[in-house]
Image (cartoon, rainbow, N blue to C red; front, side, top):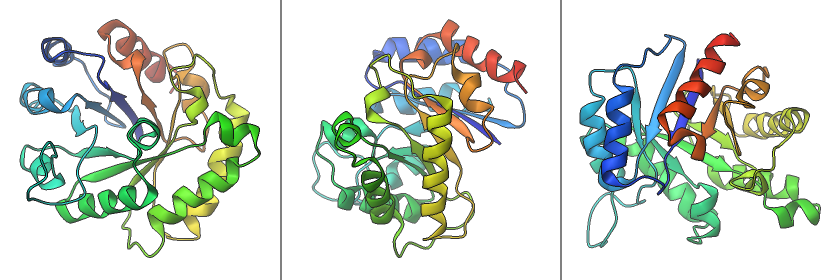
Amino acid sequence: MTYIFANWKMYLTHKEGLALARKLQTVSIPDDVTLGVFPNMITTAAVKELLEDTAIQVGAQNLAWTPAGAYTGAVSAFIAKEIGLSYALVGHSERRYIFAETNTVVRKKIEACFDSGITPVVCIGETTKDLEEGNREYRIKKQIMKALEGLSVKDNQLIIAYEPVWAIGTGKQCAPQDVIEMHTLIRKEIKSYTDAEVPLLYGGSVDAQNVVSYIKLDCVDGVLVGGASTHYDSLISLLGAVQESR
């Protein structure tokens, strides 16, 4: 299975998100491709309804780690599951480094997803500072350890997305050979905590022009796409490039 996950972030308004979802209603998705879209939280339920009769999955960009209670502004994994969401991004770099979410919070969110039946897409990655100071492997290993240590994982119950922070929204590209090296490290680390099948995605300035260079790698099970997924033409071009490369 190849995963194409479209993180719309906060690029689209409610109306723009719905308009994009309507255009996607007629898109044909191959059986061996899972296309998932992650709208903003206000738009998510309506997008789920629009795409109900399609093969396109809908996920949450973020979820709270607690199931219910006096948590103003929070949305739990159980609420997401109730409206039919399949996935949730957990620990995205923007949540970690802009909203100061810790590894401990990320772990709680993973457990909350497991409890509700949502598949967490756990994002890990190093910053420019990590890269410059030689802390790249340390950062990745620590994030994986905090996410998986002592966690009981079943096959395909969890997805990990490697997203080098220095390559997100910067126009800088992570070279395919670099992705191979990092994914090899990540898979080795995952195996030290679980024998379960864990799909591994790549994310970081992915677009129609470079997606094939990543998707063709044996170590890559799919991609997490940001800005390029927020416009119908660029998303369709990306999907077309993936299909033509198979």
